[in-house]
Image 1 (tube, rainbow, N blue to C red):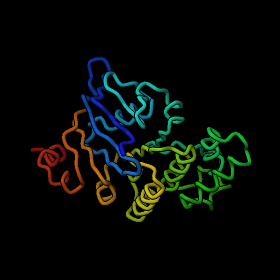
Image 2: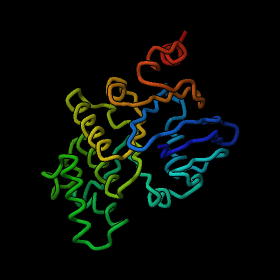
Image 3: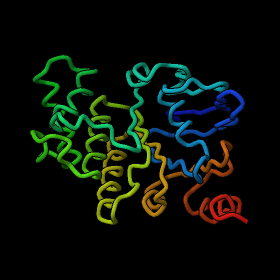
Image 4: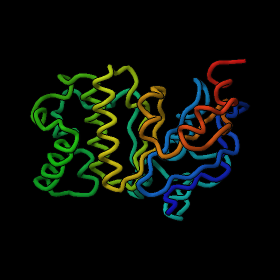
Length: 236
């Protein structure tokens, strides 16, 4: 069942076109990778889906409802959560308090919000940091904390922006494990990623952008052998 439908979405900034007529979909519980070389328009597309930018043209349907132009808070309430390439944690707050800030979007009782936060910390295997400042955690741990915080709003789809960038192989495996367990809960994941060895084995589908245009879509195997994709990454 289609959960997210991006239909002919364009985003222009003055004379610059960051996305041009991009169309793709994400099914319920599906993991979709959004890849492409630097400047391909991946993060702009994320920002359109998450409400940080309003598309110049096109529609973005979540469960059949057009959310294009919604504010980030309205998108979050509709069921869209996201993480950022640079983990935006509140470094002076504890890990539990970080997740509680999101949990309280839905649960205004502090005790119940804390209980929900602890559950998501355990899900991300970070419960040992519950009462420690987020600033004491490694980059990999802070990224998983950002995922736990995003999950605390109980999203239907999670947008993850380069969650594996800069991680060592062991940390990449931890990040992959988290994504697979999110999928097992029926939550769809749309993932921008440069670490192809991390996203290719777990994605159900890959969408490739180059210079704002979709140039390929298919299984990881299909996309990785596509000459157009190879040229976009490696040049002529």
